[in-house]
Length: 238
Image (cartoon, rainbow, N blue to C red; front, side, top):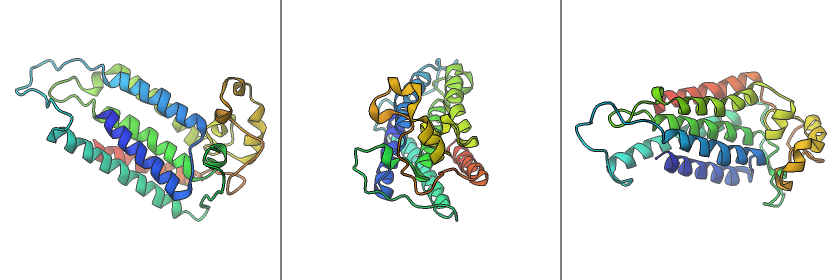
């Protein structure tokens, strides 16, 4: 169910990004979310040991069974509502400038310098980690997430860099993921050594800034508001 919910919500988030403003996330964000986070979390959620006592009834044996469908539907609904709330809050900010572009669809770099993309990055990271924990709760058939040390380490390891991105600004790390980034830093890092090992469309920095302002940094108050909304989403989800 983790992969199903993650797939449905992530697909809808990408649809909203394209329909809303034709935007993409920073190239390294896709590497982080799709190659690293998804793989590590899938490995971690598969590790819980069986419960110490036998359950009175066997687990539901079908992905299309009513319990699985209802549980996945509730998770998808909570995640999508959380995403909508975050977007409404962003659009209500007086400093927010909506992103518009005429760049070609294949030009990832030209479509990720904006205020909207980092919000989708924060949301998707939260959604994946929170869903992995929810579906490792254990209950009758498996030990709980509190006994799954690899999942705890995976969740902390995946969330920590993103929280650092939320709290910091105008660093090489920020501009590599285009979160709280500014034009000067972005232009300066296009010669970074790591670009020798990345595909052209994945490279950090560049010679042209496509953002609606010279900086797409969130004010501190909005950063903590985002963390609060995601925290409330976790409370409801659990």
